[in-house]
Length: 355
Image (tube, rainbow, N blue to C red; front, side, top):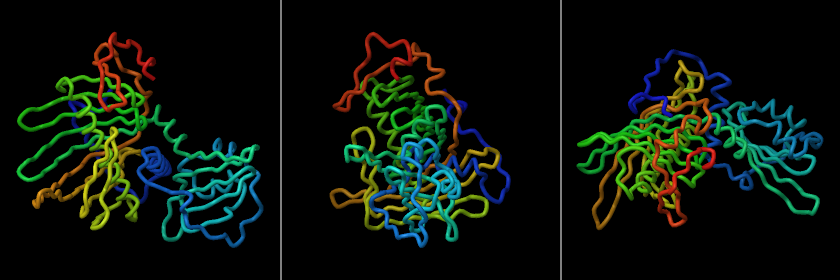
């Protein structure tokens, strides 16, 4: 299923440009929303009344969800909703709809509100209760035909130990992920894993029997850590003229938490991250990145510093989840509530039966 060759990154040529195009802007917005690489606590947004909020909008909550799309410009959102926000501060806005409210989060610069990156609605139902929905559902549904492709080289040093490897991911949603990995060192290891609906695992390659859950958790932990650092860097930096975002983050108080496979990994403070994310000009939906992450582990009065470098690219793909999976080539497992796995016997012969 991989678009890479022999597990290595495809090298892409770059050329100069002044700023990213609309397709790229929309892709970044969808990416950040779909992978939950940022957080917006709607009920916690601090908002102030708009000077002239205008009349209430005649658009219903249902119509808003049908017409809005992540990546729309601020002006397009106003046209869809048929009016100005009733409350707004910086890049957060609240719109009064026909049967409820819509809270929106936009990307912004110092001088303008730009593109829609997230929204949530509170609908008032006839029985007096309310129903909440967000744009996350729409973004995740689009990933089944438009996965996020990530190809990354990972180099991690701690004490005298050094591990290097390559991971290629196709992410169709939180529970639908293809992983192709190779680890370099004393022995090269090649592994393919496909997580389906968060319930099934398909496996090929040199993973010891009984270690499938451990390997999968490790690959996903690297993915979630990398995505979290990319998101933090993009949020906390101002894009340059060519769309590049350089960042340097030093956190001395709060730990960094990554949740994966029923486990929570805690990287203690102080920790630091630095690097860049920049457009690949030969690909309208491609970005390269190079990130260094430093954390210090302490135990029994001693400490060890770990330095991990993630370098590679991410882009939007165009393929249907499972379109080229030949079930007979994979070992099959069912995920257990306890966190383990059991082999599927007899094997399932149609991919659609997993979905």
